[in-house]
Image (cartoon, rainbow, N blue to C red; front, side, top):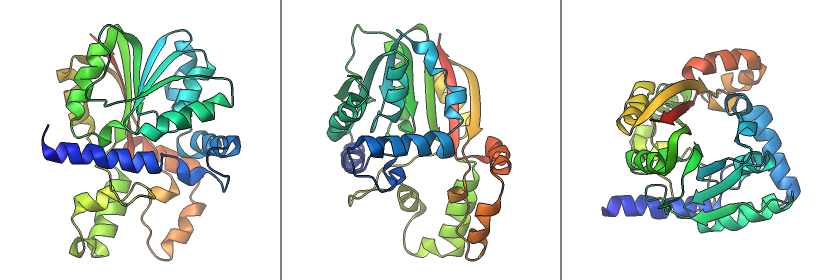
Length: 278
């Protein structure tokens, strides 16, 4: 494996092992407590990504085999376990396995979670009804390989549901590139690729790889990997995604949420795809 890819993966282990996604939504509760987990769940599904429960029919996977690529602290694993899915999760950060077991243990769930690489899935004969990944595959250096691996471990007709970052979004072009990188002269301090990596909150000294995708490009990669794309949505525009322009930034909170949701369906920060193995 090329050295650059190895370095990206090692950085990911540190970043997500130290600070799993959702940490900022803990509401002041102590880490590894039920209160912390429930604070993040509430903020995640009522404010940050409330549309996820509409787009993903979690209940339809009762007693069906589900593989999650990158389970983090277990917020979506909780949704699958609570409806009775036969859940398996794989994550690059060793620390996350213990986190998920602890958090979901508060509710009596014992998910099967392992440490591993989504580009090299450790399943030979096992086949799944769903391979699911929320906000993870844009951090892997070879997303095409993860697509091929997902296709390999799916049953014929199995579903592939992924969420990745959207290149043609307000957050990417206006907040990050135009305002932060150009108008605020960020280009004089660092390259834009490095600035993009800085969007992820971490308490470590490492920066993760961050990639972005277009609708057309993502569809093409999925089709080339043997999938039929059934649905593609654009979502996620909250006030934190708007440019932090002095004076104006205070006004963003007065924008009605329905307005942001409508705009987010075209220029939101997330691409959500439902595909099927053919």
